Length: 243
Image (cartoon, rainbow, N blue to C red; front, side, top):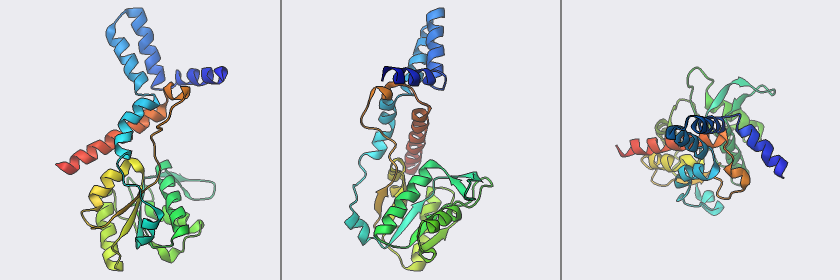
């Protein structure tokens, strides 16, 4: 176990933010400057799981826990895209970003229990393929009837997701969506969707908070820094909604 932890620690010192924490700490010892020590501590803290959770947990806590019985009362799913990559995998399908893949998996699991129409949201951004089309192909490959997929391939952000999904729901006479998105994004998405739908049933997919810790949790990781960035983006989005 000690060898395993040592290897993890060694790798963390070669990658940001751990490498910055190490270099600034070393510089502080050599040059005796408090600023270097402060920067070393800051980079270390921003790379560990407990500090990451301080940013992420407020977004993921407080989301109403939805039961499968409540999901059954919804009349359609709204699946929000979370990005795709501009290249194909060995199956010939464009690669889904990790949060998109988790949302798609959640939609598939719900559909297998309660088959309902799925509004798939996601347009074309910066020359990439239409995200909704890529997600549709994945859903069909895993058994969703193509006739149950309603393609919304024009939206570029959460506000447009809600607006265009609402227009499609009105056209199809659908009123009660089960909203599928990442847990860290759900609070903001709910605020936007409730402008258009009186009843929204939240069903969060991937959770990025850890909530329980081991010695590995205190070794800096680039993933934790990335997740803090996701959280800050959500806070800025929530702040914009209040403006």
